[in-house]
Length: 536
Image 1 (cartoon, rainbow, N blue to C red):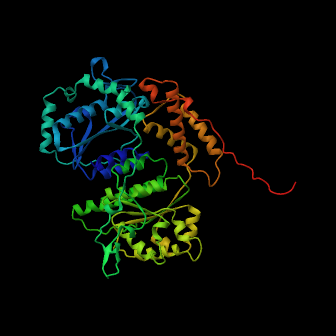
Image 2 (tube, rainbow, N blue to C red):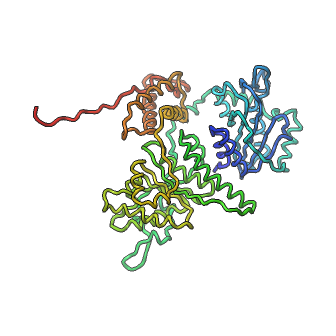
């Protein structure tokens, strides 16, 4: 199931900048029906049911001001409470959870996917301890300072929700529809790990983020561009003629993956702007409003050193544009120098035509494009590829595809100078800077938590110290940025697994706890001196 609406809401509240969060949330809500539940649940504050297709988001806006201590567990066999210095109140997260469960029962099969979102101006001072509980209740919580940039327009209260108001009016409160014992079990499940959870967290292999698909499932074999002339004068399709590429299918959670990536603020904002422009266009068309909108080129250069996120962004790019209705298919065709050069001279034009045909509705990503554009020397036939492609890109009627050139910054700048027209055809240029120490540390900790593991006290500092030594000793041309973090994570896991086996570790929590013994020692690279040849 493609939870595109839910993902757009979750992606919006993940924004660090509050103004951007409100803007993105406003845009996402424009593509849903928004119903105010204030009349049905008057003591729950600003509460909205937002529905798009078969997805529902229950959004609560909490205007409480001040610091609070949250206790989500049923309090003295009563309702969960939030405490401040002066008073206490019923937990807004619990209220949101109760309303969501009630709506889930009422709507039944009408809505297949639910999400609960709380945006609060309260500062919950023990949120580090309680994040796991919120997650287990499937409630996303965002604390903000101001909400004046948030604008929510509601639709007329529908007949199918009147039953919800009747249910509420027949009760003392909506919370009475929730079994507090069952709620208590939900809370307990957030703080204790079952055997099954340990198996999933510590034993399951990582699933590939992007699914590779066979080229023949993407192309139209009847398209003459894939045919070859036979000796008898007929033309026919042959798989052997296809240029070597890898093709990846679009993914459903591209928004969440993009927002979880450390840094890359400029390219993230660029993608958001393109998607918002498309959503705005759709909204105008739905209202039969005809105004002129700017044409935005999708062709882009992604420049940077190894491990800075170029390839991941390129792979996400197609899925993000597909979900916004900009690209019709959303596949990613990953090509390189070898994809364009055939077995004989002059096959570059044919391969360019086939690759562009494959890319219809999708993204053509050319990895290490500088190798293709510069060539080994002036007579290298790879230099013919870009001029051929530029002719195809000049056709403004063909906008259902995007070409991404990925490569190292210096080499790509040199390659751009070979043809002044390349810059105009690729107006979007983004430089992926090397990650700093703090960003690398954030990546490492995120990698551990996403793997389902927890950290013993002070282990985070040990990882930071180790990364600092690695970072300080880095040399140009040998430093791989995020790939260094991946290698470190693998080494930590190997040491952790070995320690658990050799020490006979038992207990669910112990099996998934990374300790100081699991952090490898720093071993600087040894540069061997060259052996001198000659006479003493």
